[in-house]
Image (cartoon, rainbow, N blue to C red; front, side, top):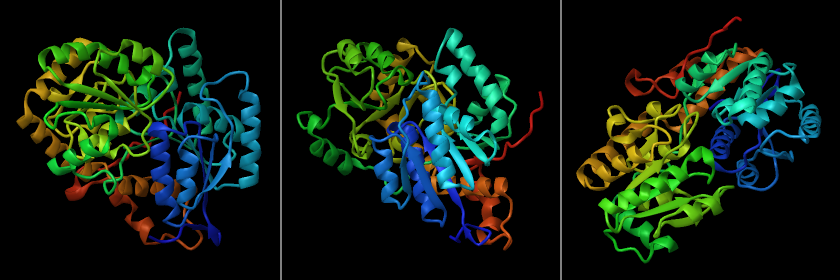
Length: 416
């Protein structure tokens, strides 16, 4: 892949992320790794701790410490001031802010003076209720003017933003996963994972196993899953549920958990958990496009997800009747999980189709190419003119055989 240059030097992209763990951190890590190896100079500003800083540093990116809490609060002015100083020192050609808090601080710090891509990874006004939701919505409507592009990870996410009254320059680039790291897990890989993962060593080989990977918080809906689980085991005796992840709701979820539920904690590598599973579930209350279901499908596992933003777009064709449930609906979730656990042939079929779908439509390499194409569009051509990758960029918008790929061209100006 050619070097990215501007006026005789490498382009510098500053990624800003407040989440340093979970799906957003994995998206940023994969994107930075691909960009660093394509010739971009990548810099990442993020809070210390978590997996993000160490992971992106391993790719060659420069990491800047930006202490910031996840939620807005009285520390926001200081966090914004520190970020503004980091931006001046870095002098990036483009700023790419990930998730609500980084999008808030970055747009306040830059105010449109540098091309800024804001990627919400799920809308902040959907994560809260009442007066707080109203404040978040008014902010997003106002701050859209300071983004050269609002980059959504699903058509659903774009539609929800537009319907909420945001006037923005939009693009949609669907999430992708590393299909080299998350790869098809056959029966031997399943047995090996159950042997190697310590919490599973006491299980019988035939034990039905459901895995949920995600931050333990209200967004991911593990409380809904735990309410559904007692109904599942009534129909599928001996079935086990594993929650992989950590978060603020850990203690409350432990109190709610039926007997036999396993809490695995944070996992540096989630691929073995997908390999060990018969079925993967993520009953989120809101998303942009969740990463864990894509990872699970890349491993050949069927997934059950709630019908929130990005869910239908992430599933393989015709999987919705088997794999999609209303959000916050424990009864429906229990029925779908039970039906799939009792039908191995259907699970095998869905898993194989899911694997093929993710490889065709959600490979992270194509996602990264599409993001680089968006950067080039926002920054304009280099003085040397377009290189081979510039000419090839439109192809990143389609999958093999002309099928839609991770990039859907939905850029438009929406006037008030």
